[in-house]
Image 1: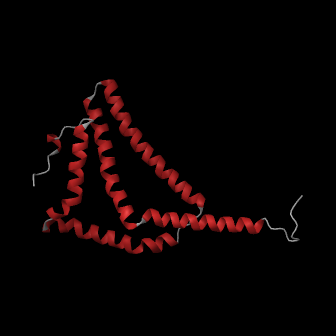
Image 2 (image 1 turned 90 degrees about the horizontal axis):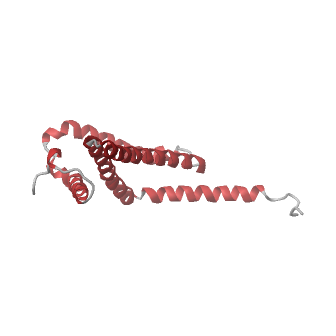
Image 3 (image 1 turned 60 degrees about the vertical axis):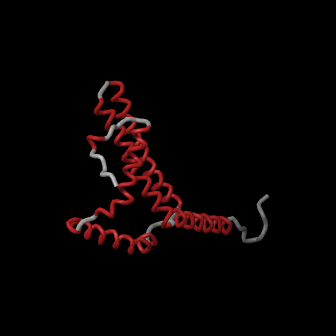
Length: 164
C-alpha cells in the first residue's frame, strides 16, 4: 500500500484531482483502522466509550423526544439551513477567490467542499447500515396516522347528521 499523500503534495483544484482526493480520503477513512497503534489508545478508548454510551442510550433518549410533525419539520429545517450555510460559505469562498484572484480563498473553498463530501459519505453509509432513515419514516408515518385518526374523531357529529 502506498502512503497517504501529505496535504502539501496534493493538488487542490476542481475536476479530476478533486475526485481523486475524495477517493483517497475515503480509502483512508474506511481502512484507517488497520493503522491503529497502542499509542492511539490514549484518545481512542475514551472516544470509543463515549460512542458506546451514545449507542446504548440512543433509543431510550429518542423515545423521550417529541415526535410531533412540527418538531421534526423544525429539526429538518435547521439541519437544511446548516447544510446550505456550509455549502454557501465554501462556494462563496471559491467564487470570491476567483473574483479577487486569491488562490488561498479558492483552495479553502475547494477544501471545504471536499471535507463536506468526505463526511457525508460515511454518515449516509452508516444511516443506511443502521436503518436510521427507516426508523424516522416509521415514526413520522405513525404520527401522521394518529393525527388523521384524531382529525376523523373530531369531525364526527354527535347526532349523526352531517352539516348542510
